[in-house]
Image (tube, rainbow, N blue to C red; front, side, top):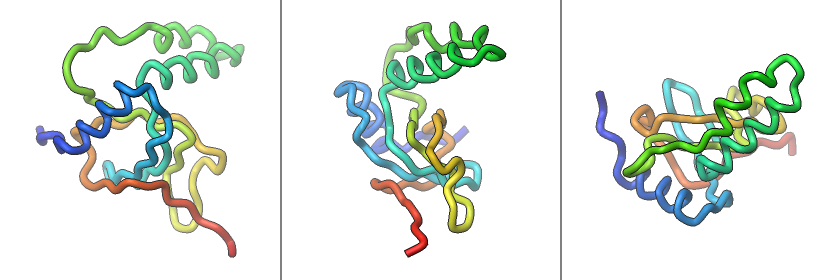
Length: 119
């Protein structure tokens, strides 16, 4: 088990405390590069729950995300929204998705959101 980067934990804690979704971050985890904006966990859960509620076939799963976490202590995960997994010259999905990444599994990171253009 690796020790989480304390600076990254501090960044996540600031996102949680400020209830802000403006912090852009790019991380490497499990060989994948994920780039996007961080959201507080409660905001992220609410949005995922709304998406699942709107899906007739996945509606039953929305309740798992609507429950508030009862966790104490520093954040253990990063909650990305409008995020993409970078693959070559494209980001998947193009419009951005919702990703939850364990801080412990992040091997590298930088502030900022990478994007590609054809120009």
